Length: 67
Image (cartoon, rainbow, N blue to C red; front, side, top):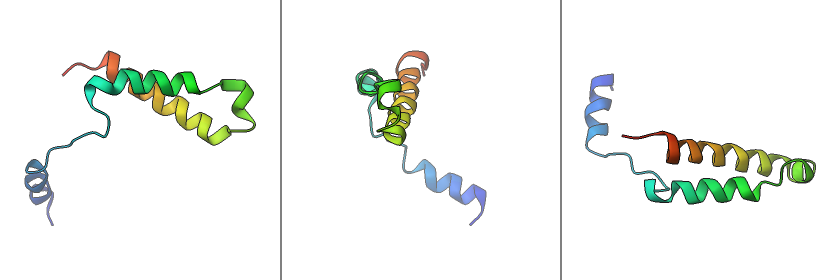
C-alpha cells in the first residue's frame, strides 16, 4: 500500500481522542495531583512516572494548544 493510499484511507476516519478537549484539563490536573512524587517513587515508580508524564502532556494540550 502506497503512502498516498494510506493518506486517502485515513481521511475517511478522523482521529477521535480518548479524552475530549473539554475534559483534558481535569484529567491532566487529576493525574498530576495523584502523583505524590518522591514519597511514592520507590513504591510506585512506574505508575508515578506515567501519571506525571501523561498529566503533563494533557495539561500542555489543555492549556497551550489552540486549533
